[in-house]
Image (tube, rainbow, N blue to C red; front, side, top):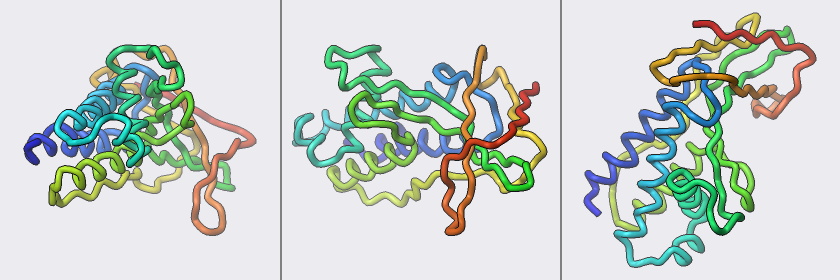
Length: 201
């Protein structure tokens, strides 16, 4: 595997996805530029096995992140898999932080991998781990941060998203999740007592 091909097919698209996820857009959970980019990255990572001296079982034993991304790539390409426990659909949800004064800030959109047997995982963090696994296996020395971005900490009176048909052809619904910051600064899932939600064009 050529390192430039690896950068072109995995790292550069990952960075593009990372940048798009912090835009305050509303997305159909299962079909948009987010799922297209995510699916293509997963397929590219999955096929790193073709350039290695490892088989699937060996790679999965060495890296659970690779296993999850590999299953996501196969699911993206083929739909429901023969081994149902490998099914790993991609879903997108907008994440907001809730503040005690009843305001909301957009954190980012989260591309989630809902693996049938290995649970739910954030695509960005899992794919970055899998990419680093393959960089190590290939012996690539590439400068790459691979850290998820967050949107600026701007609080508003409502949880607001913009629909843009450039990134999502059609939207019949969208998913949102809420988090609250605790004393150590960590964000935990939270169910606000009241939600004001808006989608505008």
